[in-house]
Image 1: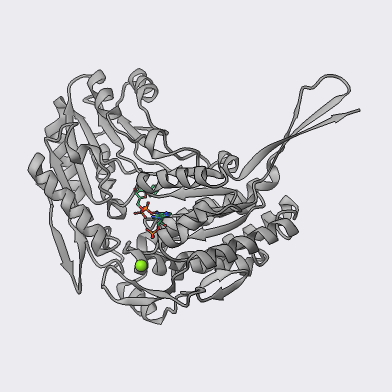
Image 2: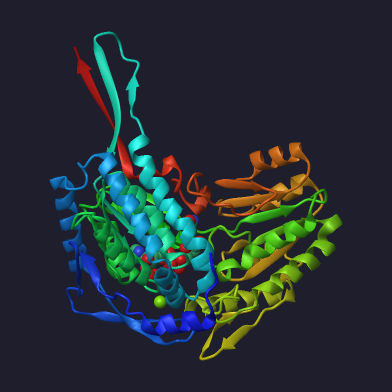
Length: 495
Ligand code: NAP
Ligand code: MG
């Protein structure tokens, strides 16, 4: 992918006219109340646009058109091959608009535009293609029934899916939920995070252009309590696909219980351990990967935020991690050389800084620790590392969701396992070792949805992703993602 200059991105940013209206029944519309909220760029504090502030009335309207489209079969009863063709067209359209989408994402939530443009979004295009291509290659089952009987086992679309997503990878999280759900034939209502509605609305434009019929895909921007909660409680929503905090994830379980027992799939928080054994082959490569905790401003649920290092290499390894972390100096997100942009907003920045204050009180600060002003915005934070952390410390237990690494040390393998599993979360874990038996022992012992050996936080559409314990349930990515958006039906035929 080619590099675009700071001038190029800055000029393109002034030319953009982002969508701000809700998308219901194939049309861009104001919220029913007429209310709209100010959407700001956290890297400048400048106003980007006004965004429709949806509520209960919009939710009811969108659910009813989504249901009607599902029942009419305009999408749900199209053949898998036809749905594939439409979604392949969508992938081409995302690719066509890559520059615009990268820029919208960067302006909305502060991430470095060139990183989104060169890496994240091209991967996302492949993701859409992979799910499109999968849908007409999945076969159902026939059970071994007694003679004279045929028992068919099919998976059918659940109906109306509500996707509620966070702001850290706005379009990725939307696509992870909506594309498999659409591929399977469902109608979908997407609620983006209040901080990052722009690419969700652009996606709506492209989904319509690709040929998904009106009413099948709807986007309701707005606030969690006003849009997320009524979707969660709605009696005619069949499935919730949520990515966000554990606290809000728990609410979705209770929304389901209080309403119609809708499926509630949750991808929640993490505090992922990254364990470095003395026998690691390439400590420098491991340190470079450990420093990726600062990638995306540290706003990643599966980030390796607890670095657990064996005593023999602790000091030397820490030096290397500090050196690699310096590459993540905060900068203008539109500068193609920037690796760390702005935090998503001032409130979140304040929350991360309050964890850094707690860290200063309980451990030793060895890098960063400061809030930084760039241009007209104070929403930047230096890459920050604390050493001498112990498992009971707040910064070893709670998800910070910022560029903050907590470093612990251990002597024995058993101690490393105990420390790693001392968490309410279980999303991801990493182990660095050259000992194959140890690698297998560790991957069996670590309580996480994914264990990475000699790497960190690998994600691919081909491989399931999701958490154990309070990191959630269900899996995004791979054919297993379809399990969330389909239900099993058995048909007995006697002959
Ligand atoms: P969040 O506060 O939980 O918000 C997620 C979504 O839920 C947003 O759209 C939010 O709307 C909505 N929401 C908030 N309160 C709600 C309520 N009472 N009822 C219904 N919906 C509600 O999370 P966030 O701050 O956006 O994102 C950070 C969190 O996401 C972190 O904990 C991170 O670990 C997690 N995350 C997990 C994964 C994963 O795959 N496991 C991936 C990325 C992020 P508003 O916009 O109004 O807040
Ligand atoms: Mg924004």
